[in-house]
Image (cartoon, rainbow, N blue to C red; front, side):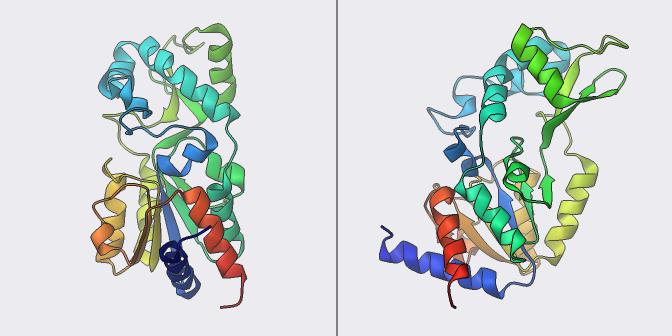
Length: 257
């Protein structure tokens, strides 16, 4: 059962969405925890609790010893393969279908937004649909590459040049995909409402997008369990799991105003 405060926050968020002309969502790892995918920064359960990201998930580390990356990403790849969209992903897809959300900017590489049915998704940190040889830059279909690794434990190398093959995800020390980031910035420039969902906003430059939006006069709704550096700028801040809050917002939007 919702508390009075949470019910009021949901009502306020629904009103802002209903009144927006161009609403977007900005999502981070917290939106996928209810799909069984851990976030990266929680002290005990986060992905960085047991691994040094600069060793296992940096471009330098990958080029030096790709086996360390693949050893680290193995369990995560299994989670991505088996995960299903949760009610938060489905709620955002429902908002888009109803014309109440123009698109999603996500830091996640789990592809759960597209699996939920969202059509306009800017994957700022890449995805695992494709993979690229880091020597000759040949491109490969991602799932067969990863599935073969999961079956054999052998690091994938390019059949043409012998270079290591990397999933098209952004590692530390690597630039964001230029075209995707440019299109995301263009979208934010026309946004009058931005829902920030499940992100600590600690990883730049993607984390700068909410500040860019606010400088343009965009209203902000923050849905996150922990505080963020934009909370003071937000019109609504909700400390609750997205899988609980977003379906309630959709329900409110489907009922009479």
